[in-house]
Length: 148
Image (cartoon, rainbow, N blue to C red; front, side, top):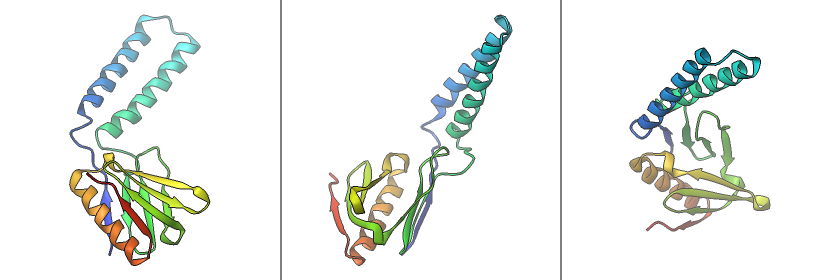
């Protein structure tokens, strides 16, 4: 069994995009109002670059899309544009805890990997939980579900 999903955040970040746009506009206006010093110029450039990255992310145009890919060998997860691609092999997983908002993958040496389910649409969450549970049971990995 295989599951592949790309995270899409469409409606929930429109307010964030508007706020960031207004903030970036204020930074540009302040560039013209105040005396141009090295400190103010570097601060403004940094804020405009940060704002641009956040604006692109909030509009659903990230540089590298967030995704989850589940197959028989491993789970690959990237939860955002600034996050690192995590690859977890099923052989490394000792136990899986599933609740409404996250999946905890307990690995050897008390290491834990958390998959945040809030970033996924509701129907993708249920499909992910089903696929992870089925693969884990076929590989004799303990699964604890705490879904209400």
